[in-house]
Length: 133
Image 1 (cartoon, helix red, strand yellow):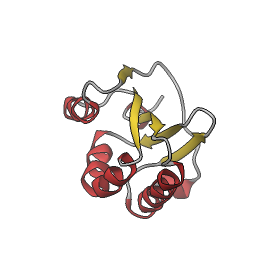
Image 2: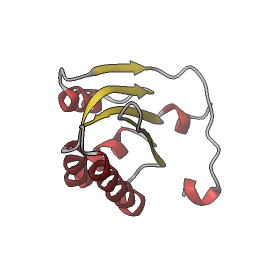
Image 3: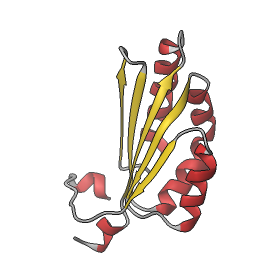
Image 4: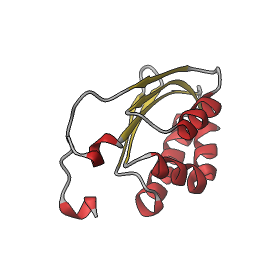
């Protein structure tokens, strides 16, 4: 594993969509992901919806803790718009963020949900050369 892979962080956010807000939630997520694709530091963002259970799962891959801080700084209005239509039910951090990001995640989710941190054992990432630039 390279040192670059050692800093990778994968966030999984499980959100409970508020009853009657599914379409508004979808619209807010689409706008947030479009913004992240154009301006955000994420290497990958994927969001999936389980309509039957009214759950959404968002996966975001970051190069390092600095990228997470950049995301928080520039995307807050989009995050707030999404949060009008759901609540975080579970937040999982895979990798080892620095103390500042750990504190930010804890502060952001508070006591409202289950929060876990899982350090990496091994792994690799395959992206095209263009996405690694």
